[in-house]
Amino acid sequence: MIGIDWGTTSFRAFRIARDGTIRDRRAGPRGILNVPNSRFAETLREEVGPWLAAGEDHVLLSGMIGSRQGWKEAPYLPCPAGAAEIAAALTDVPFDWGQVKLVPGLAAEDAAGVPEVMRGEETQIIGCLAAIGGSGLACLPGSHSKWARIDARRIVGFTTHLTGEAFAALRGHTILARMMRDGATDAAAFDQGVTRSGDADGLLHHVFGARTLALTGRMAESETASYLSGILIGHEVRAALGAQRGVVVQLIGTPELTALYARAIAACGCYAERHDGDAAAHGLAAIGGHAAWT
Amino acid sequence: MIGIDWGTTSFRAFRIARDGTIRDRRAGPRGILNVPNSRFAETLREEVGPWLAAGEDHVLLSGMIGSRQGWKEAPYLPCPAGAAEIAAALTDVPFDWGQVKLVPGLAAEDAAGVPEVMRGEETQIIGCLAAIGGSGLACLPGSHSKWARIDARRIVGFTTHLTGEAFAALRGHTILARMMRDGATDAAAFDQGVTRSGDADGLLHHVFGARTLALTGRMAESETASYLSGILIGHEVRAALGAQRGVVVQLIGTPELTALYARAIAACGCYAERHDGDAAAHGLAAIGGHAAWT
Image (cartoon, rainbow over the protein chains, first blue to last red):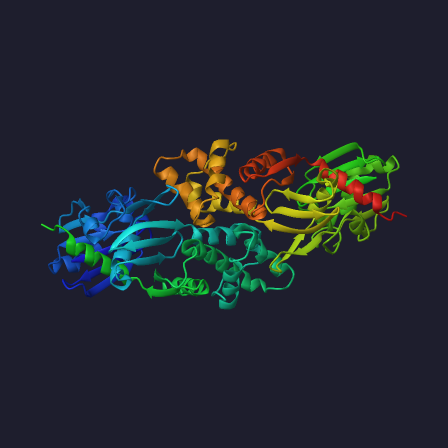
């Protein structure tokens, strides 16, 4: 089969053998925002034409391609949901060169009844179920970080944190912007921010400290962006873990981001296992294995 | 005497009688950022020339005019400090038509040893000491909200929260921007945000809910900005009050902002008394009364 993680700004395709191994892969910038005039069928054929020509005719798509702005809306499926429930809720789209199905996003409510949605992350989490061992906690850091609880191989609930976007907004569009510099994350300053996030007086107070520490010469301006990152990721991790200690968090994302989250999780007395982008391929394979192809 | 609250973008001057009553006032946009080529002396003469001509020659300035970007830097004075300590630390600047003195900003450290600074707010707090009764808690909401503890008529410590700037950055520069509208604050949505700020899972999770509530039709898009404001102000107030209940907070600021903060403070089981912009005039009068004019 062909599995594709088709997001807002990226397109990652995998040719997957029956046993789940990845036979081939390709990636590019043709996310749904970069496909003019909704030419999704044509784009798909251009990207994976050789695999289709080689006889693959099961194509499973996850991510924002199934949103209202994508090829066709694949309605959100309520939690709890695992590979079988998701496979039973796929949305078919017409395609002249094979069968194409869309993975639905998932919907949930948090403890206070506020709605939650994810689209694309569910497939990556399903792809890590082997590591999770059927139950546990997964975190997908990013602009909108997701924390998901897994029980009996199903995603039972999740929460979203606006951490990545909040970092960019505070770093770029407040008084902090004047002192912050681009560049690699300074681990010591990041850790200092994570420690700071455990203090009293709250996030909105902690972020102001990036300014006063630099103003008073107690932190180099070049370190303040890493410190801010540590404060925000630290607040996210502490809120998501609550009073839990000693638990293992499955981190799914880019190596740079999962490395930072692993530091923050360790600082909170928990453990992290890191997974890379192939989680999407494994999830597509697992869902595709349950799907009703004709 | 003449007292002037001279900030970054605003200039507010008061002609103050010996007994502290305000005899006259004027306000305009000539904050220090709007004074080209550091023409502070000329600007001062242009703004309050008639009062100088009438015989006033004691001029006390508070606010960013005493910063490195202002007329002359008036170094930060460490807390605790009251009117007498501040008056003993004024900085003189040369002026051909009268004596001009600058009020110093205050410096402190929070419970974790992170430095804090204020410049201008100390004068407003001093101006409210009569209402505070010598001891208590004052809050000056804004881009960088200040919470100050007052004991025995001296400011003993304070914390800053980046609430106003964080609101503008999140409202204008994240995915939330797409749904938010300008306009007056919706009190019910604001209160809902304040309530939300007391839930588990933290600020970065709560702000994402503004999006999902609107996406799922459970909140009108036009209400989301007020909801976000309630979440952020709620988090600030809860962090600043901690476990305190039944205390009175002196709110100093614009009527619009202090009205919102009063709602959030009431929601946390405390009380608010609201003060307007004349707090600066009263503070300048109190400090000027202790000053060593020649």
